[in-house]
Length: 387
Ligand SMILES: Cc1ncc(COP(=O)(O)O)c(C=O)c1O
Picture 1 (tube, rainbow, N blue to C red):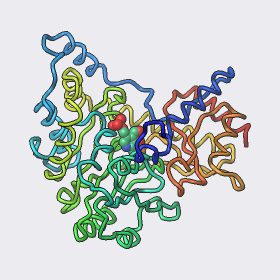
Picture 2 (cartoon, helix red, strand yellow):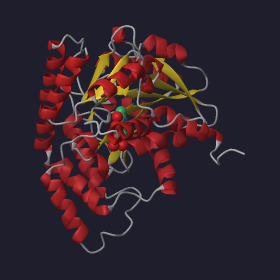
Picture 3 (cartoon, helix red, strand yellow):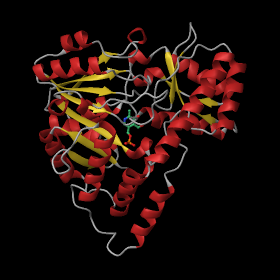
């Protein structure tokens, strides 16, 4: 007898960040002052206007009811307006936008919506673990494509096309990328859209970090590419954009057929977002652009501080183009798990081993800049001592 878990569940590795939580608890229990650069959870809070809308909503009669499955029409319209302003592309709020309980929920469920037993899905390595987990839970097979430093962590379109088999039904892209911090360019995205359409492979583009970009860069939507809306869907999130990770609001946008399939899964499995949270999300999307700019500037300043501090100490640190992570090569002669363990033991610093994001993540660790300056300074000082 097994412990009751299905073959699919048993075949999943433990969720990376759950394991990191365990390691952290063990270190904290021993009295160490831990600096947690492990998990990507923004320390900055949501805009005040968002909090006010939520509180008003909670006090209103009827806020306790179930929402409609498609979410408030005002929320879908607010996202459409935000998206058009941001990317210059009109989306139909009825058929091309679906609110999610955070983008992770949709990222996990899209495989159930679009894949059958035995189908293959192209997944970035290194990448966010949920792409592969969703596929495995749907009985499909993740096939990993490498993201290499010498290619700026971008997929090679030719190599990708060669990996497509008659079973390949879907592929994942994630730019700005967690964990590599890379951004995709229009010519490459165009080439990928062309071959995906030719070969009947649906694209799922994860843009959870769309607004955390630096040095004036602007993240590109799949919907901006000719044929992109037909080729697939894109996931957006308020978690990082408006510092609302615990609120659980995200969106799937794009191909109406795929959106319909995902909505069908969701109507069977969940009952939508708490109505006052949806109202607060409308406030975020319609009134809080200033907040996004402040957050972007803070993360850019932290990036400069951290990368500058470590470089002064002689570390080799690539400059992130986006996200609030730093993707650091580990010193020669060690591996990512060993190096993370060493940083925890010698400096009380929690980081994430690159290998947790896939075999091609080996040789790197990820650090999150989701702590205030004084803690980042302390982290830099401790890291100097480790080298
Ligand atoms: C690449 C990536 N995609 C999606 C998510 C999910 O974000 P949420 O479910 O909060 O929208 C995360 C969260 O860390 C992420 O790193």
